[in-house]
Structure formats: structure tokens, C-alpha cells
Length: 273
Image (cartoon, rainbow, N blue to C red; front, side, top):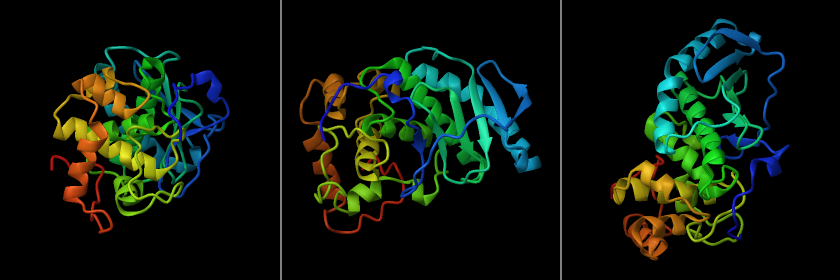
């Protein structure tokens, strides 16, 4: 579990980056055999699995109604940049396990139409779109690592709150069970960054720490993203000038949710405490 500089997008070829429920492995869906919808916007186009029929068209129409305003919000968070390889291509598949794209910088985003209600489809687009912004922005945010995966989730959850199915919520995994890597309860994924986006233990810690900085310490997303570093601890230090991020965060968490007892947390964001 080492902390390293982010990989560049080119080194990630062949490895899908996913927003998937717990225990599910996904691969990116190709764009082939999906029909391009006539509707498009400045930064988005959409294709739909023809087998979805009218429901697929309705999802595509709904996503196109909100995608530009969400793009503008994310663009503001990431200092006004515009990602390369535009426009985004939203590929509405018949899947039920979330969303994926081929690399952090890939702008073809596969969205599983049966993953949840339409508002959750919107949050999936935001999460995958955010990862493209991360790849273009840098500053230590890597969508294939625990810190970058955490960022994609907290932004999606904040922009479209309360729509995540229970098996997408990550904090209870970290709060309530020992790490599936070390066997340690509440392992430190603040001073350390795990080089995967598929471990709900490290993701849960990252999600909680990011929401702690935003909603407990009251830093804005723009400030947090601009302060990005290869670890969340270093991001906190860039924001505050202090080196006690992990200890301050864990002291509050342990006081509110005593280790070894069920946390009863059902959301990505229990803050402020």
C-alpha cells in the first residue's frame, strides 16, 4: 500500500475505471451496436442500446436535460478547464451494475440503464465525467486510485444527493469491518493511497475524509480540488498548513462511531458531526 504519483492516462490502457456496487467487477462497454440519438448538446452526445426501446430513449433525453449544467458545475470545481477529447459520449447500455470508461481520460462513458432510477443515472454520469476532469487536472487526483475514486463519488453524491442504492454506499464498509487487505479495523487511507478504485474499504475512508474536509471543516470543493496531492493527508496539509489530518479525522470518527460497534451509517456523508 504505497503512495505514488498518479499514472498518466496512457499507462492505463485496457483497464476499465468503474463506478460499481460492492462485490461487482465491471468492464467498459464498447460503443458499437448502440444507436446515436439525434439529440446532442455542446459537450455531449448520446447512444442507446436499441434493446432498451422507449425506456432507453427516455433515459437519454433526461440525461441530456441536465448534462450541461452539471458539466458547468464540475468545470467550476476544476478551475475552469475543459477536458481534451470532447464531446463526452454517453453510452446507455442495458447493464445493471453502474458505469465505466476505458481509462481515466476516456470521454466515452458507459452508463447501465438498469442500475437504478434516472436521477442515479445522472449521478453516474457526473462520477465518470469527474474522473475525466481529474485526468486533465492532475494535482494528484487519479481515478484509478482510492483518492480519485473517492472524489468522483463525493461530487456525484453532493450534486445529486440521496439517490445512491445502498450497495454503492462505501463508508460503512470501512467503519464496520476490518480491511480485506490487512485485517486492520479502520485502516489509514488518508496518509496512504491505494492504487485501485475497486476496494470499498479504501474508498469508504476516502469518501468520509473528503466529506469531512468539505462539510465539517467547511472548505469548498474548489479549494479541496485545487489543493490536491498524491495523498489525502497532503491535500489536507495544502489546505490548512497542518499535519494532523488523519489524527483529527479519526478522533472525531471514533468518538461518534466507536470502533467495533455497528455504525448504522447508511450514507456517504454523515457530516457535520
